[in-house]
Length: 191
Image 1 (cartoon, one colour):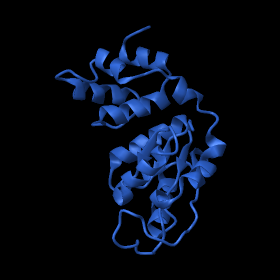
Image 2 (cartoon, rainbow, N blue to C red):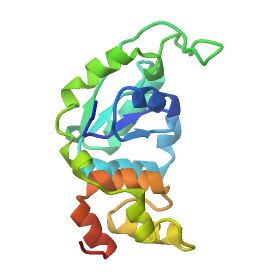
Image 3 (cartoon, rainbow, N blue to C red):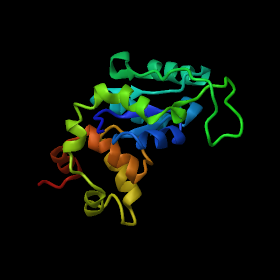
Image 4 (tube, rainbow, N blue to C red):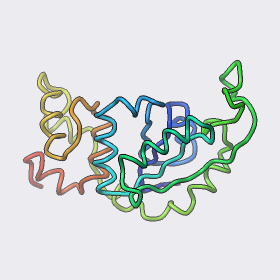
């Protein structure tokens, strides 16, 4: 199932769960890290200028705080809020249940997640039509060269993205923010 909008979740285990269900750009808030990470906020704000973001946080108090913070830094009309049900239980990987004793995104069944995301399956054109790959980054010196990190920072700045992004994170963001032709113009390589 391809989803054309980036999906924002709390942590890496939530992202891993969703990767079993959808083909989409999945970003994490690093839990409460979003409160202190200016770069992460800047990335989400830049993405939200180009495309709505789907927000899926846990149904506990922490998830509510993170969702509230996102709403305070990103315009409400750029966020699509999906709420997972409040299900009592414990994630398989944990020895103890969470503080509130409820499952998070990572504990939800795949069928439920598919059902929740089904309305957003269409409209994936911008992300899936962009053939940009890591090979393009290599050709353009954004990976594989001594000064690749500096080149990525310079390129990211042109797009209003934060510095020090990993090649994978930058690639995912650029595929949403730009068409392939816009990428070629911005990087200085015309088709």
